[in-house]
Length: 207
Image (cartoon, rainbow, N blue to C red; front, side, top):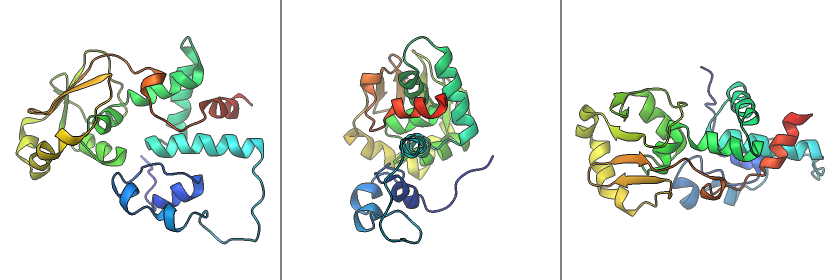
């Protein structure tokens, strides 16, 4: 599957906002702080974005943050539109339920891209079964744990020492001794700390 492989800091500069694509490095060594202008040649004064441009930028910010390609993002949007309630909020809830995002929220990784790699390499068990699909959606009551062979890795041993200082969302719980997470409930829009204008995303696809 195609994947963006260029410098992710360019995505933050293009969006004009910190998307936390590199974990802690985005806090300590953020390129956006030193180079706030978008990448590419600077051709004099920047033109004001049109409404369509603002909608596109907001949609891209959501995509970049969760590491999703356009086709997959459209599928999530269509699924959110079929559910009762507000489409934009439904979309964020679906994205938060992705397994790679849950791994990130549990503190098992510093970024979603790292979480995706952990899942793809077969280190994670979902309800006791090995899964390597980062996009699968968790349900209420699901448990997320580490494969027995993965607990012997150096990364796991270091994670046990640092995970105690990480903040876990209220819709998840974590046994910090054994690194076993559980989905207490499905996330609500109030549980999701985002800076996205989801209404602009809906307007983008409504045209």
